[in-house]
Image (cartoon, rainbow, N blue to C red):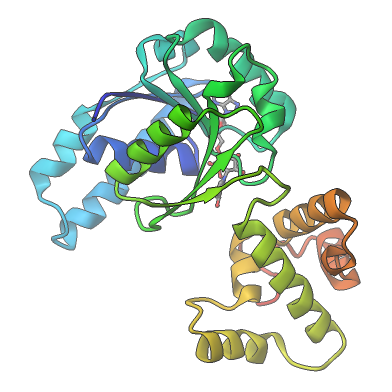
Length: 282
Ligand SMILES: NC(=O)c1ccc[n+]([C@@H]2O[C@H](COP(=O)([O-])OP(=O)(O)OC[C@H]3O[C@@H](n4cnc5c(N)ncnc54)[C@H](O)[C@@H]3O)[C@@H](O)[C@H]2O)c1
């Protein structure tokens, strides 16, 4: 199937998606707003590929071959000949809609337009286009070269054909897909982690258990690779607060109401690894 992929956004996720697609034989065009951003994205890809080569997972030739299949640009028009476009820009509806509105004018009629949003309903993003049946969510996980999951998210008008093409693409680049049939807030994975984190924070804030012991309980009791609080520190306490607020707004379900501690941590700037302190110190 390997064809032409355009990735919009050369950040953490966009460059990861570009990397795995190029490894799988796709010709990739990666677009960001300026040369510094595309260069950062490309440098990140080289560093990641070289780590795999140093471990012997791939050969030195594979590094150059994959990099040879990636071109970078600041022009959105470069997406014109793409079979699939994956958008991975900032998590803001207005920005994503601007990108999709422009892609709608530029892309081939049969192109699949995918978004890597972690929580915004695909239906809302698709309204910026005249072809909502071609818009689908491909929610990859970070770091993309390591994480096998892709949550495929149907918007209200996503066609079966679009979903099937997105699935074939994700599987070809090494991912296992789960299908989210309705683009509810938080899809499936963020719903689950939000429910777990809210309960975990309540248990910690009421003094029932320490953060360390709570994470150990989840790791040894449930076989989780990481406890929910360590995961929150990695993802960003603010990101989790935002996600739980959105899900609560969407569902009015009390179990997603963000606990006070989560709110206070964000107000105080303890956002997790990125600020050096969250539930743990770094
Ligand atoms: N970071 C994660 O763990 C993670 C996991 C799953 C999904 N996501 C989702 O993936 C998307 C990207 O996240 P990220 O962590 O890579 O963000 P990031 O901030 O690392 O990268 C976003 C990139 O998009 C670029 N950009 C902004 N507007 C643009 C435009 N109009 N055209 C082209 N490029 C543009 C920015 O310059 C930046 O380089 C978001 O929707 C996010 O919610 C993130």
